[in-house]
Structure formats: structure tokens, C-alpha cells
Image (cartoon, rainbow, N blue to C red):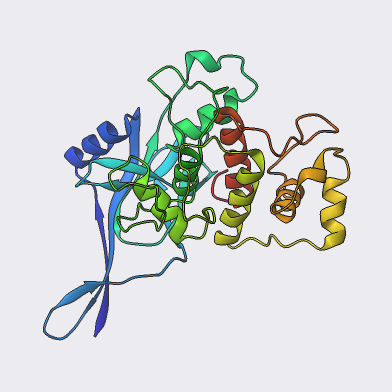
Length: 301
């Protein structure tokens, strides 16, 4: 048996397809990557790397703005481009993109310049635009984001799946209220398979329920663990993280996760003395927390 690595540059028509799929300003570079195992008879099967991300490096023929550029995985069947954790390093006028993802496929570097009219001068404008350029968050229309609108459990699960560069899962999620065919069904299944989410005692997920800040914190800490980061805190460290806030007495099941999220710099208080962990999270708050997570996990720079 032999292992075959194949790397093929994208054609001009393929670059146009990706540009259209991502609605991007430009496609800086891209390749088809595949790793296959072949026997003596010539039969081949794709090589699986498991859940651990593999590092791919592309040397680009141009400089890019890292706040507007990202790596994507393009699916020619669905005509969709999805975010891939990507770091950029420019030296002596040469930019290298480091993509972190496991699996064969068509990878490209795109550059966008997304903005939303209703986010002008908003406190979260920079982070929302950054993640929109990286295809992690989307607007409710081409020029509106509605950052102050509450976000649901299914919406945040889908954002986490995108942020980790996970592929949707067609298998059932295991929740009795997640209907096959729902827009979020595959993302919820992917989040469940990765251990990012859990349901309620009655077997439900309650996808349309507005998510609480403590629930977000728990999901983000699980995402950090999935990304290979240490999240465990001693009791002393947990107390140290929570001591500035006077309203943490209501914390129960999520106390350790909320403390870990504060310690990691993912979650801040609503004021210097209040955390409001049981409060409903907004789309803008979610984008900011995701940006902090992606930076902490070294998935963007």
C-alpha cells in the first residue's frame, strides 16, 4: 500500500465559482488537496486524519489584509464556501496562509470587505465586520446585522460549528425537537457530535429559545477543549475569577464554565460588579465572544 498526496491549482472558472459562492471581492489563491491510500491493484480510498486538524500552508502571490482575508473550504456540490481557521504571516512582501483543518477538499484564500449600515459606530462593529469577512457570522440582509437582537441556542450552535471549521453532520442530533430539514439541523448535529452542546433532561434542545450568557460561556469552554486548550480551573482560581461580581450567587450548573470563560478572557461583566450570567445574549455579544475565542485558540490573527 502507498500513500499519495495530490495538490492541484485551481482553474480560472473554479476561482470564479468560489468568488461567487463566498460573495467575495477576490480569491487570492487556492488548491485541491487530497491524500489517498492506494493498493497494488490501483484501488484508492481517502485517508482520514480524524478530528485533529492538519496544517496546510499556502504561499500567496500577493499581500492580503488579514482582517479581510480568510481560508475557506469550497464544496462544489452545494456551491458553498465555509470558514477554515487561518493565520497569515507577511514577510518581505510575501504572505503565507496557514490553514488548520482535517480532510481532503478544495481550499482557497478569499478577501472581502463586509460592512453593515446598522453597525456603524456600534461598540462591536470591528469584531462583527472581522467575522463577517471570515464567513463566521452573517447579516440578516446584505447591509443589516441587527447586533442588539437576542440570539437563539440553535443560532449560536451554528456559529460555533462555523468558528471551529466543522462540517455539517447529516446524522440525527439525538434531540427530540430538532427536526430533520430545519436550517440548523446539520449544525446542531455537528455541535452535538463534537461535544459542544447538551440538551435538557426531557431530551430536547430547545433550538428557538434565546440563549443565556452562562449557556454561551459553557459552549465556548467546550469549544476551547475541543480545540485542545486547557480549561480546568482550581476552586481557588474559580473564586478569584468570580469575586469581582456581586450577582454570581445564582450560578449553579455553569459556575465552573463561567469562571473559566472569565479567566480565559472570553466573558466580561456587564458592569464592573455585575455579570448577568442569566441574561439573554445578543448577536453582537456573540460575535465579540467568538472573536475572542478564535484569537485565544490561535485560529485567526
